[in-house]
Length: 201
Image 1 (cartoon, rainbow, N blue to C red):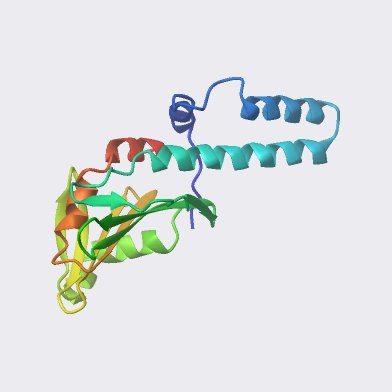
Image 2: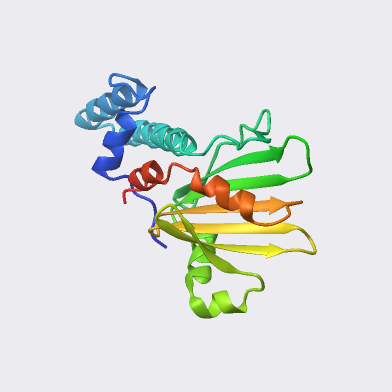
């Protein structure tokens, strides 16, 4: 499994994000790590670099979170939804919950990087033979990307899976919906251009 590795271009994008100003704690810790390394304190240098990696992952999470779309008319983002980024297997998973204002509808939106289960799911749906085996599954156009939706009219549950070049995956899971259309609308309003750039695509 390939771990998600920031490219120089991606780091440049992060430095352009508000709150990622030069001379912050990241550059200070890099300077400290360099000083400790030059002094021969390898353990101290490693400790500082681990803090740097943690801070960078936080910056990636914030930047990816900014690509999530605002709620559509008649929908809202669940108040206090601060689950944010969950590190896993060298990548990051970011979640957000959307709810219907005057209805039972709910959409769980996830964006993950670094491979893992969601990327495997996206690749499975991209396989025409596997797609044919899925009930009520169909391919849909999301901006310039191709995604897969499924919908079960009995349970009123829908799902949309969108793979971004094998480096990031968007998964939308809806419940109490009349169809997959709210998921398609939400995905079409996602800032996929920025998400792809952050993923190094």
